[in-house]
Length: 499
Image (tube, rainbow, N blue to C red; front, side):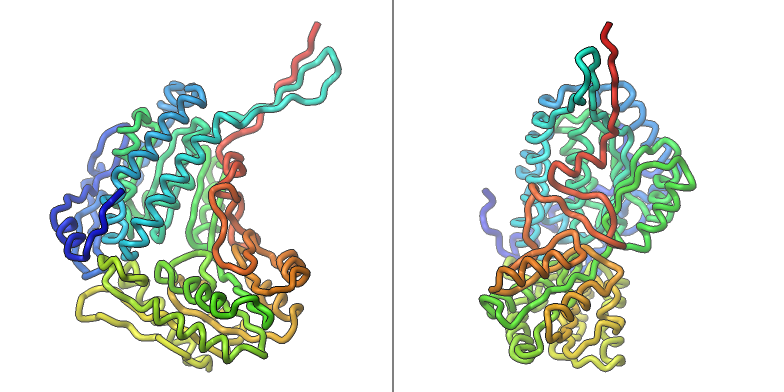
């Protein structure tokens, strides 16, 4: 296990680190065909970490060609599941062996606290790889119930070339949720990380090769959405497109699929998750602590963040005071300080977006209960205080739109029916939570909520064994669990007539 490092030790490690900003195509690192690059700027201090290959149509052609050739050759597709499992388990081991390097890349590139990257993101990435690897040789095909002179086989086959476009908030974890089942089922993959946080994905490619994944089976194309992302989405030789990100981009990807080859499209998009606290919640202090964590963890840059706090009116004022007190443990700090719980916003553009929503909340008449200020401006970094608005209506901009920052809207209710109505009054349906000691109320409320994940008396539960995804405009398909395999395989019915 890693020894505990001080901030000085992490900064020394960062100063000695060499950053690789190249693409990874057909088993080798390479610059973009055009030679174009963009700067990877750290939100910690505004400094340039390195120049990154800005891939476009030409690079996409090379990567898709390599992925297609590797798939058709059978070099990975035709390998027995047990052998693919062994390679992916080694991949997971290498992720853990390089935990400090990968965690530091995450922190420097997108601003999350180093303790969260080290203890959360990297182990979760390895877990996604290892759990999926262990599952793949335990998934059986089917036989149809046929007459005695017939055999009906139902088999799953890898879909082919998979393009995975992943976001900047959890670069490693979101990549692993796509890579693990896509690779485990025998596909060839092209990963396009966000231009805001590409460095850990680029490093991941080298570890995959070291683990034994053949050339061309795993490729990484850093670049912008309107160049590399669009080219992948429209490519006639990409069989499956998987995406995590905003709802607006998700809708555009569906259009691109329809305009091209009807590639399978699986989307995990935005959220505006309700966290419902009834007056009979079993532990109000714990509920308040988790409400604070639900909005401040990862600086609120979480698709499932509990951004709408629905509180029964009879306890609302008391509960808001508890949440404000709990947020004292989530004040911004230097991300390389192991004691920091709330780090830097990913970049200046996102910081300005968050500040804009805070100003909107003030203008629409919500009461600012705490926070709302940009801090540490003298460092050149992107930091903002966790912010709570009280007396919010569900129609306000801060309650209706996904902010992707630490801005909490408190909305009162008087009955369970009103809470459900408010909770479901959104275009999203990703997650929700319910706090009550009444088991009947808990189940009835959970059943009525239109969300892909519902947590009772806690927030943000689940692991690799449970599917993850949303209702409504939060997307389709599911990550994690055995249900993820459905996204990366095609069903085939083979019917045999016996003579």
